[in-house]
Image (cartoon, rainbow, N blue to C red; front, side):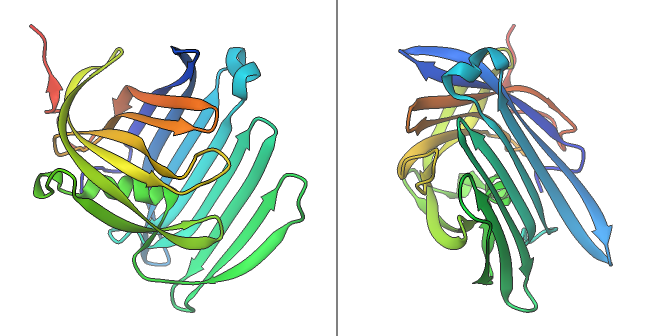
Length: 245
């Protein structure tokens, strides 16, 4: 496994405005675990926000919470709180694999509270767990252009998506240095923020940690980029980092 409890990753978020990349926010990821009723649980957390100085462009304040079965990533509980401009929404999902059901609760701005039950399926991932799952894959086993399918629990349904392996590249970041990376693209499902299509590109370190050092994607009002700012609690050495003389 490329990560361990206590790992924390922090990214600077940039927004492309009139051909200028503006450092407009920050995104953080953390991983811990726990044992409850003899069940080993992985706990993933992510938070993103724009800086107050750039809220006038497009204010963002998001949080993601994912509890899943250790090892398999099978969903137990997932919650997503989204605040984009004037759009606000909250999605939560509680999975009961034994009963074969997922119980959802959704609240969108100016809409009534919504509850539903979805049929549980094996091999599904919530959005945050899916991000960590991609780090467990051995990209050296893939050929350039190869597609890998994935089933996602999102927007009150299970949807099929994929990512494509695009080969190796060296990525130079602002502040953290240069890294040897694997590059992949993600097929995005349409949402309030993202257009549908293969617009997201992610560069993942070519070492045992497999940390995303940069991500870039189109949104409906331009494009955004996240660049690794700091990291701590890594499981292994950052062997992909290129040392300068």
